[in-house]
Length: 572
Image 1 (cartoon, rainbow, N blue to C red):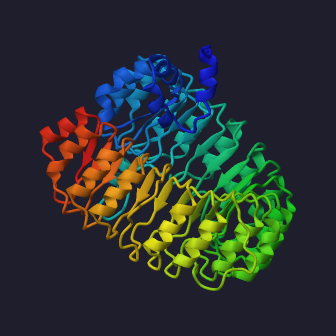
Image 2: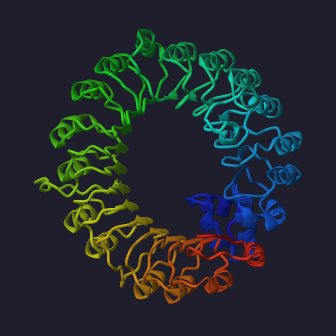
């Protein structure tokens, strides 16, 4: 008896990502139709362009479109999308050199239900563009206009003349945007260096549903303005900023946290904060579940201890660069970590093996641990080692003392590890890496770039879930690369930059065996001839991006050939 289509849709919807739809779509026409209708997002790159009209018809329920590595005419593509009739609610045009005003106007004439727009790192963004965004998409709830690229607007001596100033985002543009977007919930203004406190006044006065504000690197926004926004925005749940406390903390800012009754996420990165501020935040009795004090100064163990004792329900804690922390202080603080799922202790140079394994043993919900640039590899392991099946990600890069023994212990303690990053850990050898891979069969992403002790990595066992391998600068040879190709059938991204011993023979082994391969970086692999690239593109249709060895420059005809086959080939 055949299952109804609704049942198949329910089953397929449990898959983590639409990339898993591809093998299902090859089973039969019915599965192809079902997966086409379930696809909700599409990323457009240069190679996608030729087949885009077909893709817009094939996936009729797309709600999110993003542009990545796209160098074509954004206005014309948005005009094409506007004719598709898609139920589009999210659009990402970030990192483009020009703001696509004409394309967005065309899109708005057909699709006005857009709720999420990302225009971060975009060139030439100005006040009139923000006003047009508000007019075109009044239903927007999430807007990212962070870090616009205005490099071309500055004179050689770094000054900004009046003509250039008219091409920047100012308070006037934010007022125009805020006046139109009554449903706005989240906005990131970071990097807009010419907006002032008045921008926050406009947002807090006009956008009653505002819950999240980002104002990093906004030089003319003061603590008074932030305090006013916190007081006036009753629904504010998240605020992220930096540079607070220079030259000192204002009383109005300190007092504002008693009004932030809904604040769940607080990010004060790169600020001069005091124990007094931490105590006021603690006494405000906020529903805080995320706290970021990355690279902050002036606070002490007493201040963070008092705050954490009041917020034992925190799920996310970032204390990067808190150099006063040592293994003993982490043992004291760990009493309050019962609900933590994420912790970042990178750049805490006094922390050793003891901290890592005390965290895994005493934090039952912890899934992600960042301890880059610490002192891992030093000191003995704790007497009691507890297995923690919850830990999925370990980011341990730039720990020169980290060794194979520690890697073996980590693989025992974290058997369900999915992501391991030990970039620039020179004390690790292939023995330690292989031990992790044998024990942690769930590994999806392995980053071992610049691990000088890893001379080779020949596999004699399967890695059924490995999708990403960052192996930049390793001494692996063709035999090791061929074994990786045979044992890692789901590999989709492979970075071999600077692997000088790799030749075309090793690359062939990967191409033949890795049927899901999408990206391959061969920069500085100067023993790999560019002549093999055409064969790679033809032999592995899944390839979407290849970075060539340095000095290899494809001709215009070759580029067109690669693009016709859906692959972007970049000069090394």
